[in-house]
Amino acid sequence: MNEKLLRKINNLENIERSSAEELFQFVSFNKEDKLVDLGAGVGYISLPISKYVDEVTALDFDEDILKYLETKAEENGITNIKTLVSDFKDLQLGDEEFDKAVASISLHEVKPLSLALGEVYRVLKNKGMFLCVELEKSELSTGPRVSSENMKEEILAAGFDLVDVLYPQTKLANQSVYIVVAQKNK
Image (cartoon, rainbow, N blue to C red; front, top):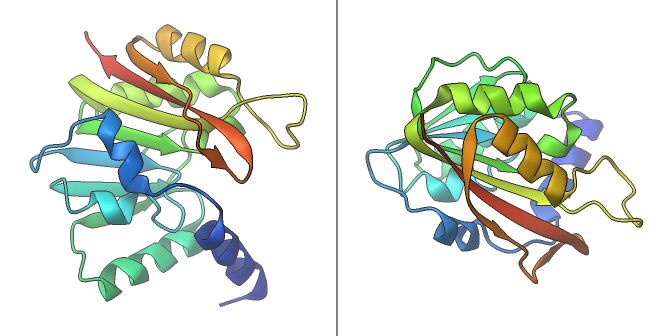
């Protein structure tokens, strides 16, 4: 593995955050569910959620990171994770293919956000749930951010109904986060 990739993996593996299982309380999962994890990275969501659902499609634009995720899944005996290199604005997935979608700290980089959210809406089945976790925009933000207000507006504009918006006390890398739970009702 090259030095740049090792640094990226190390940063993603060691970022200060709560366990992924804490996020799972906001959406109920069924063993028959097919889930897409947008911005899967090293598997923060994909690996632990794989035991609660039938199949996980771990999606990321970084092929090397996904290869690392495949290795971790194999080492842990996890066989229900498929990886896919894809742009969030043009998901190489079928219409209404998934029961659940999760985007954890990945949508703030996407411009325009409306295209990515439209794709999430497209790939979810009717009554499908979308869990979005993002860093709140503030005066102290150093990178790209989407405020919770903007995210709510964009999610509604994509056709979703808001189920809940939460502002947990937990911080990620010392930054405030928000959680939006939305449902596709067509």
